[in-house]
Image (cartoon, one colour):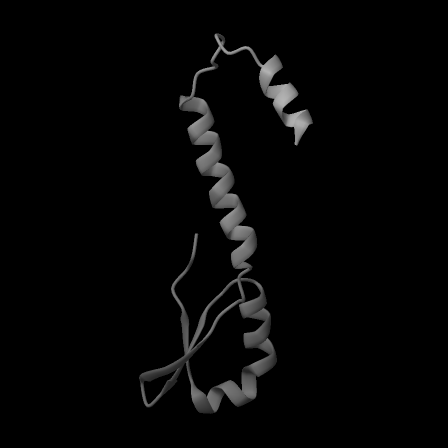
Length: 85
């Protein structure tokens, strides 16, 4: 579960930078403000490729659960056709 970003003023960032980086590496988003207005977010880097693979795997499992096995197909001609290529 993602938590709300921590808000911190830009001047305080200088003093607490190491601590903020630890929080970001733990998954926390840090919102940097100037005079109460957001100017930037420090956020953990996500590995989009890993996330897309996980999403694709979930979709595949859902698809497989809804599919039924086709028992009337003779696979021998398919195997032989594959050997010809």
